[in-house]
Length: 100
Image 1 (cartoon, helix red, strand yellow):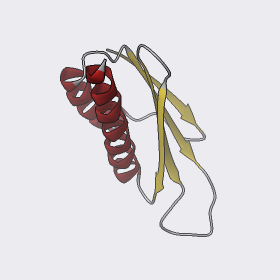
Image 2 (cartoon, rainbow, N blue to C red):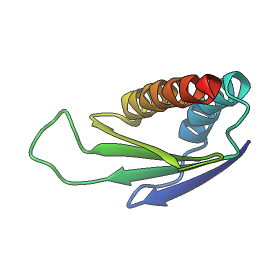
Image 3 (tube, one colour):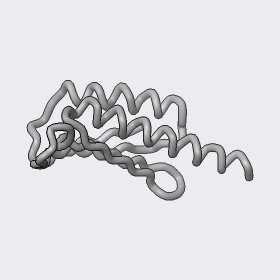
């Protein structure tokens, strides 16, 4: 699986890339239909202390693309929530594929 990282208003971080890569590699091993992942890190000004660090992940695979977004007070939590959302979507997609 190819993984592409993009940063918007955030400085690049090898640590964040490594964390996201580890989690996405696990997904890729479990669901071999995933071709590519685009990971976007954004920071936005919010009045809440619990949000503002946003992680968007878009997965390319046969059929419609899958997308997840999470906003927390740190990027690690945002990555974890986005990957969990994508895993749920992949599980549903795989179940539908088995029915046919």
